[in-house]
Length: 248
Ligand SMILES: [Zn+2]
Image (cartoon, rainbow, N blue to C red):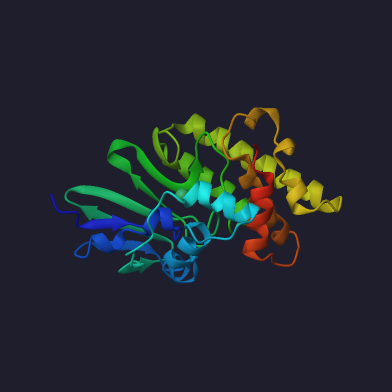
């Protein structure tokens, strides 16, 4: 069976590098996603940060551990061929599919896909199940609203961007995490705590203590602090703090 339609949920490489392997498909994404794909870290840059020649630093160690197993050769970053803003209603075969823009939240151009007749939502990275999410852009409030949008669909089979398939209860737990992030960021920022201390794994409440990759909270806090008025942070500086925060 030939794949005729692809939805790119957002511009992160783990969700869109590979579009070039479907040259005849229509690739749908938000306008902001298309823009983001051109401005994200590119495959050759990620290879330089995580490949055999990457720097002998704690950040290099971290990048090699997490990305060193992947081959970034031969990827042609391929943006959506059909972009939209807001909502796009499609009929694929005889099935109705709603592509709903909910970003900026995790990234600038996040979309989710709702398939009403079977009660399914493909949430992309609006949902991470069993692991800490990364907020690259925010605002966090928009991300919480995106969770509410998933709830409004009434779908009971929800496919996250990372982790196992979940249901509305899983969405609700994740929404609670985002509420915690929003409140904690405000409190820590007001107290003058640096973002990497606010994002340290020991700050994670017991309810989320078993979630994987707690060091990602450092990135989320950097974004939350920006929202609260902090100057933008250099990506490599933030990643160096992430590497330092990773539990042994
Ligand atoms: Zn992802």
